[in-house]
Image (cartoon, rainbow, N blue to C red; front, side, top):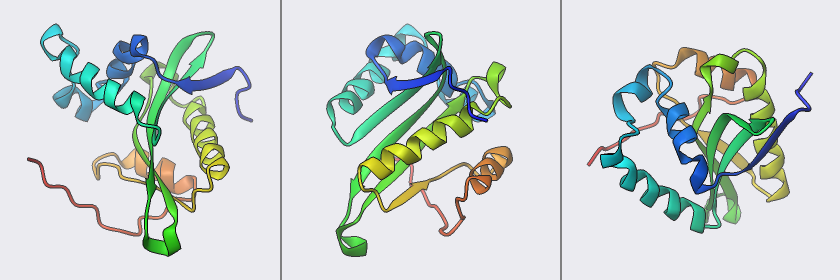
Length: 154
């Protein structure tokens, strides 16, 4: 049974420290995210670009005004598949204190509803190969590892 006390909304700039905390709350995030004053301007700049683009939805999941989870959704209009729209999911995180309580399931059900409302034909995501629990979570939701992802860091 999914939790009726959860809500989701578009993130605000005031949520940014909570989101960065969630992003750094795992082994990989600890090596690449920092919430120090010297770096805050890069996070703020990125947040503002995301917030003003109508193809982005930076979601926060709350219970009693406490942020428990986040994900970043991007609509990708495409000429492929007869002009279909895809939804890319990134930066999926649930606060470590609340994992195992089906909050991730609830958030993903909201993502799927959002996608349906916007006429999305494909939902896609990537996850690091070292995140074995995340891969199992996505597979249990019906995602298939259909492609090999590649990155080029500049």
